[in-house]
Length: 356
Image (cartoon, rainbow, N blue to C red; front, side, top):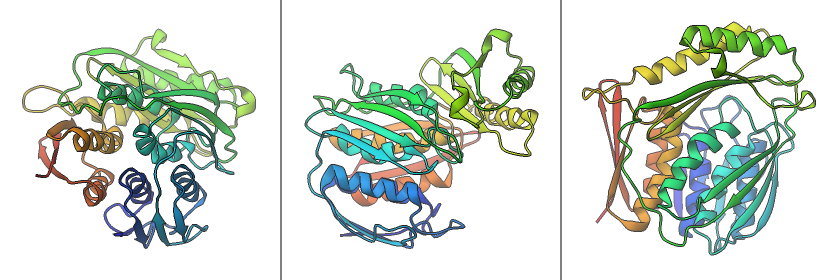
């Protein structure tokens, strides 16, 4: 059994999700102690428990410790099973994080899977639906190397904190051939940029002020400002989303409104994210391919590809977060891979290779 310390590195839920995914992928039992030890409320919250239950459902795992607040878990999976699944979080917990737990093993299953997810679709501290659809899924499609796109996402209903209630339909098509790793060293030439404001259940002026403030800061034209399609009955909620499409990668950045935070402050925070990414240019003049959050999420997908075919692959990112470092450490516990991270000015290079 692989034993993990949930207090290592970033000390949050990422350790749990990656460990669950790779336990099912490899068939190796695992145990975690001190789950989410560095969070204000340690242990399994509803969204983390939903991840455990989803991983159990697709593998028939034997599990102990799967209770709210538990800081210890033992998980012994069976073979991964493709199928039709519904995973629900009875709160605004992130349904997108549940998807990222079950996606790696279902990518390697022997048949397609359809998943209905309910819960939060746009949550602080978690990737939102737009990020998965527009940034994450296209990179995964490139790993399939000309085969049908492995991941298709359809948003049926937005889900914001605290009500939740969002719904996403997911179709996963396992590639017939192993994933093909590739180097992602630069973002390439810019192609387009736009902002989208979601503000269901709130006055339209909130979205207008956010879009205008962001456009003024970034020098964007009116046609780059969009009002999202969220219905009024899907709120109250507020998210300001910016999409930067480049030749080799599309990045998505999000900031959320909250009580007592002005629309202009939401726009200012998102502007900071965008400028940090745009300023991440290396000595060769090329911009880092991935922002900090996409780099963290990309590490596991790239690791699966290198594990399947061998060799090595690299990518650059604008920031090496503690989440990224922790994720690579957990991955290396399950897969015969070695990681190296080199920081060169404003751009970091991450290398993963299969150990001989």
